Image (cartoon, rainbow, N blue to C red; front, side, top):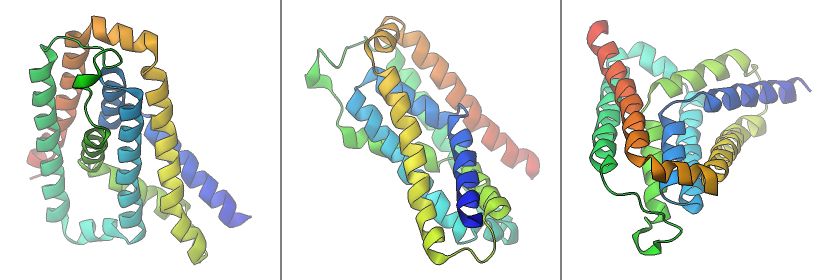
Length: 211
């Protein structure tokens, strides 16, 4: 029972963390509205796959590695910030493109694997996420937990992340949100670009000011 409560506490924390708006949410939302429901769910799977990597690394104790070798964490933050700014530039460049309803113009539909990869890269571009997972596991994972329960954690994290972002994809790929996006594509894309760029700049500024 103690182990079950610990796992439920960890999963609740993961759910809350996933629901906090950030680059992951923006990515799934934008793909779901601008592309298709299928691509939105593929993006959700990409987010879940990235979360699994963070969960595995947290279990292996990567936070301790960061503490022992802070330069590694610094480099990862810098790389993550640069990548988010790169994504921001790509979104800004595409904001002026005319809006196309993918449900009507299937020829311009992007492949689902591209949505998966984009979401996966966004998920792993934020090294602060691994600190989030490491902190949760350190605080809530009891000592002496059975190996089976530990092995199940990454799988459970995947289900939580995919479940939440699939819900986001299902909601935002419906007719009304998609119609609103298509009518205001340039403004929505630029707003998403601004938030993504600010998050990237924040990571880089943190690196600069810390040194």
